[in-house]
Length: 502
Ligand SMILES: NC(=O)C1=CN([C@@H]2O[C@H](COP(=O)(O)OP(=O)(O)OC[C@H]3O[C@@H](n4cnc5c(N)ncnc54)[C@H](O)[C@@H]3O)[C@@H](O)[C@H]2O)[C@@H](O)CC1
Ligand SMILES: [K+]
Image 1 (cartoon, rainbow, N blue to C red):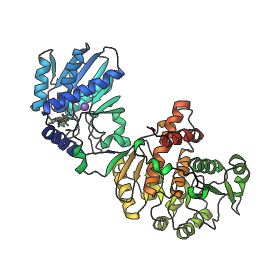
Image 2: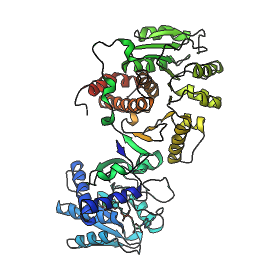
Image 3: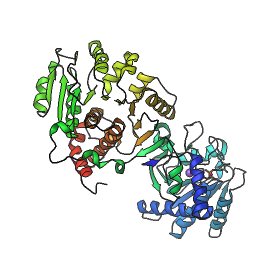
Image 4: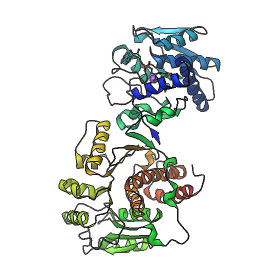
């Protein structure tokens, strides 16, 4: 788990390391710059003609050190200092002078003096010390960087981007690659601001890990190594009843595939017994395509109108392909009140709740809701930006005692204890029909096994993305379909079951 810290916490972490290691702030800057260059050279193994654009703070100081290290490696470097008429920070000045010992610097007082003709730009104008949106000369310089046809690698952060808030009013570097120090920043994980970061990599600059023991943050990144393997232990004398009974309530005319995908995902995720409740129209296809499932048939032909006898189930997954027929809406109320164990609620079940908002207070505590942004907005209203939305998700999870999974590039899992976890697996190939249905199945299976629902959601989302990443390796992003996730799940689980799974 990676804790996400604010810019202020990162600054204190730097100071803590400087004091406790001890190391001078200048040597820490050198170490950061060396780590940056080392990673850069793993990707670019030929010598380039590079423009390094430096600002007046420590980010600029990193820029001068990086420029010097690249010259030592034989690169042709043009180094520019943007002169905002302010004093350079002490370490930036030191780094600047050290650079001047070997090469000249182009001082830029007006944007016209900035000639970016190299094959690569290293952006070291501002980092986490950005104090206001980049306008005036800063904005013009950033615009020039963005207009250049050269690729841009940002140092620590794209210049103009704030680390821990979404304020897109100034100009912001649109990086191709951001090499950030020690930890990713909150803004990297939010769609609107993450757009500027491009691909990102974290380099370890050796900040003292003891600092993290006492520093708290509501935000963290959930990684594959955070998956608790004990959740997947199957003992020799166990029987299928030990691994949970799932009821999947899904499907309507034209959307029986959603019932298939979610049910198959639950079975592939270790469920002992799975029953899928579908309208009559789905009976033949489901029974044929998924013989492992038991099928419960609704009295209606094209939609679901009643769900009875739910006591025997350990978890219910509801929503995939359900449709929004008012008669289907009516079953939610009775299901929420009669089945007082946590459920996995997705898709049209969420849309039905949005049509009758009082239902949200009847949802069994601890249930997992898996909206995408559109479904979330319908349920809880629009937000001005992604960070506001995450704050809202967090407060609703606390207030309603629910686990809310807001699906996106970095799916957010907000748990009732007020913590927000960003998922680290998955790829854009998964933005395609049916992938959400697979997630509902996976999470339902984990809930049925009796794990706490916060863990079920975090692990479920991570495994789902991991399956997507394996599927991408086989079929690529364009051709990836939800059924490819089902095909990848066995490999994911066999990795988890093996002792050296990461
Ligand atoms: N503190 C440390 O020990 C380390 C810091 N490091 C680097 O230091 C960076 C943070 O350095 P700083 O705190 O000096 O901050 P920055 O270098 O990000 O920027 C601060 C400077 O930019 C100016 N500024 C801010 N916003 C502006 C705007 N909109 N228009 C014009 N000028 C503006 C400020 O007046 C100040 O001069 C990190 O991002 C990282 O790159 C690394 O060297 C690792 C070690
Ligand atoms: K930067």
